[in-house]
Length: 91
Image 1 (tube, helix red, strand yellow):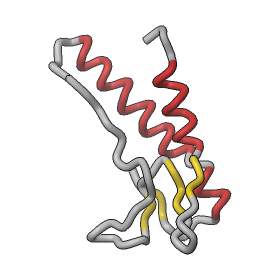
Image 2 (image 1 turned 135 degrees about the vertical axis):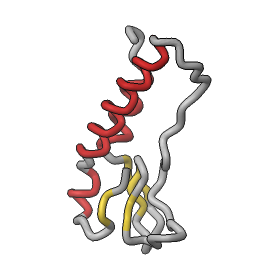
Image 3 (image 1 turned 180 degrees about the vertical axis):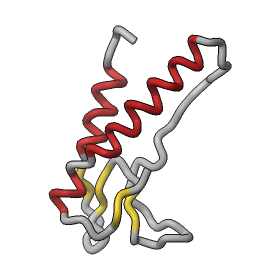
């Protein structure tokens, strides 16, 4: 799940499309597990916005925004959502 690299900083931080992607994907993964799929783990690709071999810096994949000029990192909405989802006890 990527976002265009030309979004503004505030737009990049409010990555509701990524939140919706992970929510939907993990819901379907849970259904598959309930139906007997043997799943031993899952990880989000990628935790940080990074250089992609095919796309360079034109897309942002991470849960954390990386300013490519000074390398400062800023958690996106999806990072907070993922953290909250992992802390839930009822699922």
